[in-house]
Picture 1 (cartoon, helix red, strand yellow):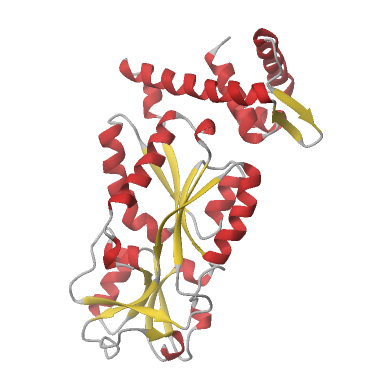
Picture 2: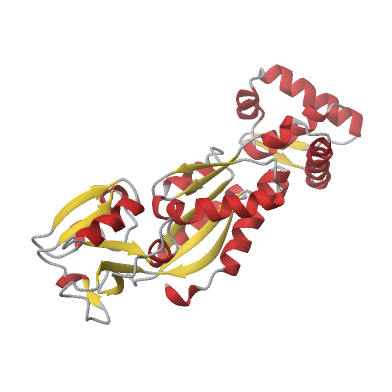
Amino acid sequence: MRMEHLQYLIEINNYHSISAAAQALYLSQTTLSAILKGVEEELGFPIFLRTHNGVQPTTEGEEALALIWEILSRYEEIQGLGGADTSRRPVPILLSPTINEALSLPLSRRFLEREPEGNLEFHIEVGDEIGNRILNNDGNIGVTYYTQRHLEEYRAIASKYQVEVEVLCRDKLYLLMRRDHPLAGRRSISVDELCDLNFAILAHFNTQEDSIAQPRYLGHGNRYTTFPNVTLLKRAVCSGNVVSLLSGYAIQHGSENCPEELLGIPLTGTREENAILMCLIHRPDSSVRYQEKVAIQCIKEHFAALDWREST
């Protein structure tokens, strides 16, 4: 039995389909079916049940797949001892725009401390796209925001696809401004009061359907300028009579910490409760390779170590 054949079994389980796994592996369905049949004959029991919706692991198959994942993980570690290039295969991580600005650098540092030869590869996706891509097997790890309602809806779907969703922290949206702005003396600000203001926003606020404070739900007479990232957005707020809408995490833990001249004031009167949940979405341990498992653990450790008194 060859090591790559074990990896093929993991891919079949990920896709719940021999044909979809064959396409992802650049094999013909006939070839992959023959490999699976050979492995099952060698083991002496069926790993998958064939159904009209694809394949599902048998009871013995579930146990075998868990052991196979462990074998592949250990094999990667053994290869790493000899400096093999497989340890440098990038680990893709899907991040929403504001989370990427604050998370990518510290997560890279933490990951490289554990895996000096490893390589994280960050992909920026908007809103629900992160969850959808993982459901569609276009990624194994992602971090994004959900409102409570959208989180419950997504979890109901994710459980059917063996996708795990974990809440990393509770956050909210703030109005970011200079400390000398006319609104700076307020303890909170209702969205209904946000009229005739100059807004610096990120592009996803125009398109993300689950945002609780999109521009079209704010007051009248506002003017909006779109910026490509949080760093430039903060600089725009610092430089003039401009305000912005950002999460507490992006304000306090961005690539540039919040300058002293800026202040974040929590919003009230939003469409839903001003509570956004940062969520880690990932495939289970049995479906990810060793370095992906390390990356998942590093994400959890990073947020467990953060002091959230500043942004909640």
